[in-house]
Image (cartoon, rainbow, N blue to C red; front, side, top):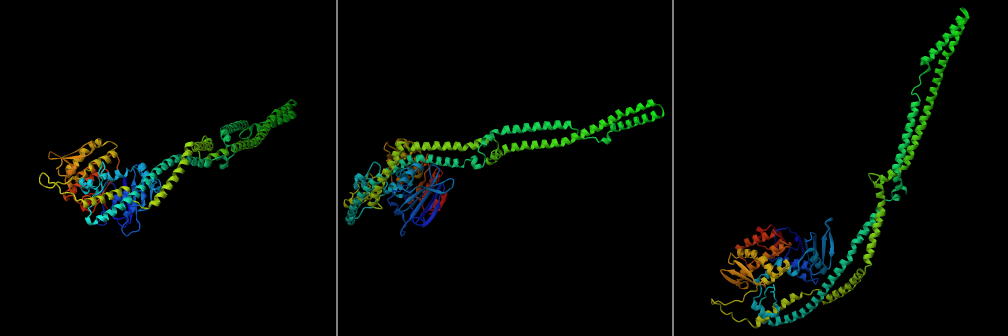
Length: 631
């Protein structure tokens, strides 16, 4: 978890308005005035809003209203933004990683708190406040001493000491006013307890409604899937939408046979054409160029002339030579007849060629009539091969079956008795929640937290008790100096919270933290203390010069340094498991200046493990930090 941005408007201790980008590492936040910016309080008010308007105390003096927002990255890797009107309502948004736009998660304070705990990874408020937040009032030297705390109200001291700071003892003349304040606080406490009880019921009902909503939202995925399947079904192509014949699938199946028939018909036609071409001469020789024709004519004329001439002039027997002109003229006549026959064949060849062309054209036209819709379907569907056409056209039928299947699943879930009972239960819980919220509204728009009222009441009673019966003079110690009651040991409460963070017991936590805590302590105290031991309840003893000193009896400055060492140790070890920002306000006011550079180096080391945000105007810390932000 890491903070990315803090935005404020009319918030006490900050600039009137601004957005402050934050990065990883050790950052120093410089307040605009001498007043320390209440970063910790604002963060707690945003992350753990009680819905009662208690965060209105952070509105800047003189301003009617204020706003505060934090943008951060959760443990789930998503970016969230919490925005609140101080004293009013608030919202939780999650940034959509695809569009980078915020999407509303919740506007209800209790639902937001549950979401931050369950989904985002925030720890309980007490753990976050006592482990990851460090304020001046949490230092052991700022808390009441044991004797004063017991004298004020023994019932208020629990197993683990409070982190509230001590209040000043009221003067005697103000006892009457203090007693009047006690009565007012007791009345406020009664009202706060009633409100706390109502709020506890509201939180319980909100948790139940959240669980019921999660159960009812189980159908959201099915509804989205049905909507997507229906959209895909409507968009799926059909022969009608593409303008194709209804029997396009049968045409696709017949297409290979149509191609084969076309090829066979063209092959037979080509065979006939070749046979016809072989039977008809390619060119008819002219009769004038036929030598046999002219030889026959010449021979016939010759024999006819010889037969007539010799038969009349020499002897009658030579007349028979004229008969030889018959075969000679016959050869010429045969050549003439063959020439005429060839001419006839050539003329017939032209007419047959026309018939072959007509047959070929008819074959192609018949094939095109069968193949054109198939090619049209291939183009309309955008497929490479004809084998993909059936799958593309059958997709609508498959999608329709998917829609029916999803609708059956949704009907089965919604008809389940548990689902119907959950819907009815939600309405009943919502009515109860509305009634409780109305009761809370009647109690008042702003009621302080019961524990805060109890702490103030305890402090006022303590002041009255100390004013009425001042403590006796302290008995002298062994060295003659008056003894002083020890301070509270902060170890049990802090180790208990650390055990919750590490999900283990206090003894195991002690073994995990001891070595590193001693390293921090020896460095901060110039090796005045060389060791720390804890008992089974978490109470600590410091080892110094061969002596065992309970940490409550340490000088206040040394006790604060021990507390700082233990806090930094817990944050360092916890950051190895889950990173959460470590928030510090200006808690080093009373620390020696020579130790501040060492503390800054320690904080910078923590900045390599998790984000450290330190609110201070001290220039020394700014020089050692990874960056500064003027808030």
